[in-house]
Length: 338
Length: 164
Image 1 (cartoon, helix red, strand yellow):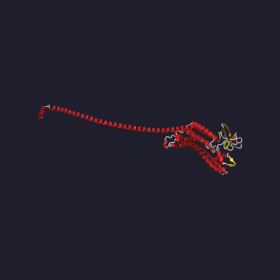
Image 2 (image 1 turned 180 degrees about the vertical axis):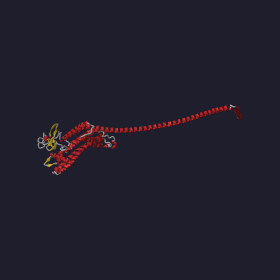
Image 3 (image 1 turned 120 degrees about the horizontal axis):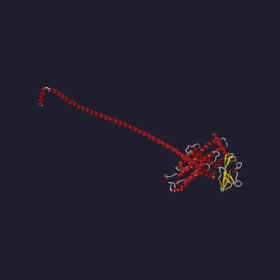
Image 4 (image 1 turned 30 degrees about the vertical axis):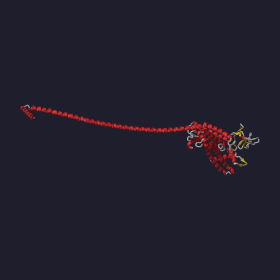
């Protein structure tokens, strides 16, 4: 078992260094790590096993779809293609000579990047798992759960009872689809990100931004009278404080999802950085003796990250539920409390 | 800075994909799962409450039975008591009646005896009287067969009469 893990992690390191940019022969851990946690137009599973993902560009309203393979020559060096080239991990317009142009306006990049592809895989996995489970429930709803169903049922019940019911109250049912979806989406993607060669999807600010934004929108649109009253006329606060209180409360609406966004992004990215850094130690010290130590620490970190993957999905779901709960809560005795 | 700059492509794909996932899972996974869970929980709850109710009913039934039994026992005791009382009273009454009857019969017998006795005495008296008379007649017949004797007797009577 232990050997298997060592093999697993050496595989992870292999893929890490297969694409590590080595500038002037000197190993640059910073570059390697940044490259690894950032998005990419290709998916390196191992050296030689590279999946070139499709590039989709909208250039001044014009769709351009081609394979990212076009950006690489046979030596795996980046080359310009059709007026575009990869520059610092992004696609930029270039002139005939391959020099990048300053004008970026009107160029939008909707490529199926490594993150997007990884997300599609996670979505396919979500569909397979939960449609299978749903089928079991549909066929015999009163039977005891079995197999994969009995693994997920306690989690679903936990989300319903401990997260939704406990924090939202009687109107919890409306929010269950979102809470369940966001929990399993984050969890699955966190786990996929821990796989060797996996993408850092939930550690990408765009992904966490969208998730947090949906939580924000649901919160704002389900806000009842007392929710808005607490923002625009906080009970028990003198009216002359309103010019201070209202902006503070409005900022408060935004800081909640902002914290959601940053928390998930930072936690997952930090985990990836730590594991990659531990492997980098071997190459920084240029000694095989560091290897076992590095692998031991990385193994420990990976286990920790397995836990963090679940924890962060739980925290995101829990806090979302708390924000929804705050929005639908009835403050019948609000004045007595303040 | 690169790390915290959201890319438009991923923003777009994430939004689209997540909304589709939310919709599809919500419609085809969470809805049946949640309703099945609720259904199962309701049925379990119902079964439990039904069992509890049945238990209570059983207890009530048992208590009822016991009450009935106790009542029956009491009834039986009462009936027995009443019967024995009735028997006693019957015996008592009959005893009394017998006593009374006896007493009455004794009294009657005594009266009859008295009557008989009286009748017997009267008869004896009468018999004695008639016998005396007969004897006297016989004696007189014999005594008065001769003249002297008759005179003597007459004289005796006269004497007696004068004495009176």
